[in-house]
Image (cartoon, rainbow, N blue to C red):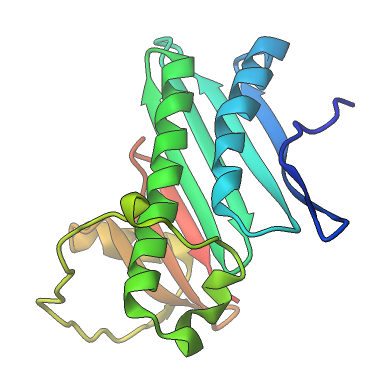
Length: 202
């Protein structure tokens, strides 16, 4: 089994501090060659600089090639208090890896910028356990998000198939419902590929 890609080992007060992303890379209709694996690991590992020390993270990478030869790259990184996820589909696998890395980096910077501007340590203390503080030039300036409409819904017990029918009836891309068996809140949604996804809560 290949050893995880290695990175920053720091020495602080004679104590070794390690930040490392391990990789779980899978391919669908594509062989994950050493060159592909090395490229993915090198690109995604650049995100390590944003994480606080002594964290062990795993990047779940899914590479897929479709019949029309387009390539899809999906990367999910579950971290402390937040899960990062990005995907890209194009005619060039390596280009999609580059774009996914850029999307993930922007997610981190965008999230941290909002947290640092609030400076509410009671509400955001857990975030500082995950990411290092951004330098001013790394912050992202974006317009404030304004909620312009609030809608109350009555969650009715049903199964996922009925929820999909309800979603199609109201011509929405998602539908929230109460699972008739578990009583938990669930969401069905239409994916970009036209298929249906299901989100289940505990």
